[in-house]
Length: 94
Image 1 (cartoon, rainbow, N blue to C red):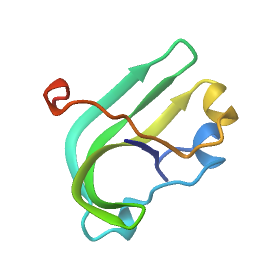
Image 2: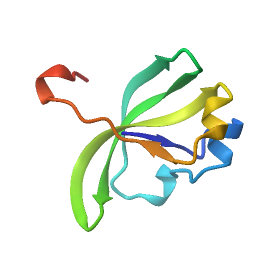
Image 3: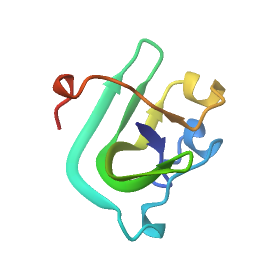
């Protein structure tokens, strides 16, 4: 899962909802960095962990990317505030 953070001042971040880790008592910064390059832009930030809700379901200690930089017009044009990726656990490593 990738979420825009309050640490991002790029247009794609500020025009959408932004995650503020200071408001969470369960936020953990893992110290891992993330950079993803697309044909239409680049995202970068930190891998973090926090308790999140998916609908009414609480998921504890969920790893996600806290986006701090977005380069590319595509991020300002999309209507969603986060991206969720689904994969098999053995294909993902942190």
